[in-house]
Image (tube, rainbow over all chains, first blue to last red; front, side):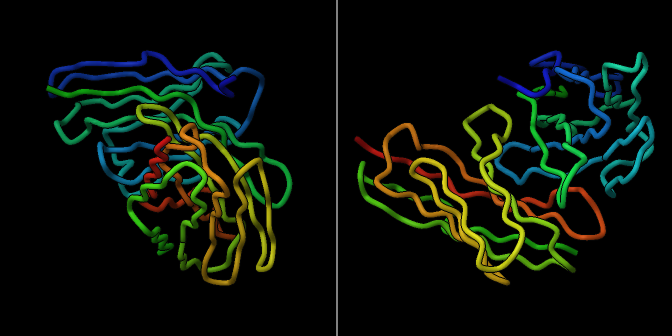
Amino acid sequence: EPEVTQTPSHQVTQMGQEVILRCVPISNHLYFYWYRQILGQKVEFLVSFYNNEISEKSEIFDDQFSVERPDGSNFTLKIRSTKLEDSAMYFCARGTGTGRTDTQYFGPGTRLTVL
Amino acid sequence: EDQVTQSPEALRLQEGESSSLNCSYTVSGLRGLFWYRQDPGKGPEFLFTLYSAGEEKEKERLKATLTKKESFLHITAPKPEDSATYLCAVQALVAYKLSFGAGTTVTVRA
């Protein structure tokens, strides 16, 4: 059973359009992450979000990206003006936030296709 | 920058043929090393966390071990349902993000 669900499962958009990807935790968690995986490549970290604030972000996470938790439950990743190279699987993960490490449990992903 | 290198890239096994996957890492202080399984088109599925050299974890036919520079995932008597891509990731002391390797794709033939 997934720790988080993600919607939509597949999003097709035109270059330059805005997209919003959603992550819905099964229970109330504080630690969230977004990763992406371009086809055939490594899983790459984008951003981490703790207690409604960005705690860390990668070089990939530039001004075209934003994250928020608008209703205290759903967790969204917005890409303002999509580019062809944004085509990838986007994974949300929730962290445990306890113990020595933060074990991360991934959702099923959203496949984003930019045309 | 944290570096994770996995080998081999692909592994084809006969059912019952045991083998090992390698994960070499460089990190400025290891908080934890993680193994995930990923099926095509799906999200990574958590398998193990290892914290320190000498540690071992087991789950069914899988056993993960850790040294100061490498981790191994041993697959004992694999079955076709063990076919997947196995990902290794490290988490540094300074951050909680995961840095992933490229993975090893395992195919087990009946």
